[in-house]
Length: 341
Image (cartoon, rainbow, N blue to C red):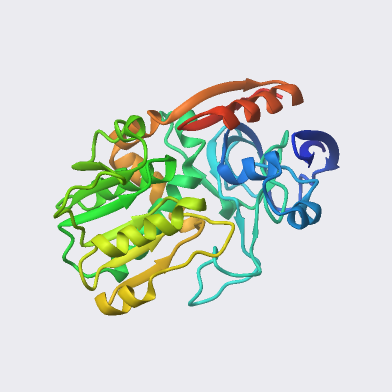
């Protein structure tokens, strides 16, 4: 079976390649129907990654957030036509102590292997999670980033002490929105406090108990624990502010990705006895838990729909480029591609 792969050859330039797919190799053939553009995809597309990294990884099919329709499964695990979310992480081994998303041997779609920007995706059955029949597929398309928050929150739940009266979330972008929303649903007795840089973005956090501009935090505001969802150049300021406002022996969960080293006030971490841990990506178990959360709390899907910036029908490479260009100009939210290639 011939498959068409849409690879980024250089910043802002896609090329088409053709590859064979083995229908009887034990994997499932999925046709991607709805894909979501991530900030990581944009760093490749715009060429803001280090030049050496770009030279090593391109050409590369982007996208690690997506859902699709099963076309063929010779193993009989899935029926043709079933809607599934695709897990982009591909582990090469199992470790009793290290999760699949932290194993250095694991590969990841749109980074160390081709992503989902293909006519068909050949994928292992254990890398697929069935979706509820009535789910909004535009929301389901970015289940991957939701699963990252689910993963971080589940780790936080094991690490942080039980006094959780006030949990702070720093970051008013997509990751901050998702993490704050899930924390509100999972920690029902906690107040969720969101800190951001833009009043207009903070206005979207209607479910939060309190919101503050980081430049105008009143005296006396504090949190028991915190999630840092800022990343980039804003990480140092956000982490410094968290360390200042968090109560002693609190836990700081870092999710924001920065390209460069970030200085941290270790003196105050020591004085307050803080716990600081990082979370990156997610695994198949986190995807299962995320889909279960969709089913248990359908209102979460409705809230997530509020951060869809645009839905773009894609029928050609030009349409793919147009969607990426639109994403580069957006102020907030997720750019969805409805695939009709």
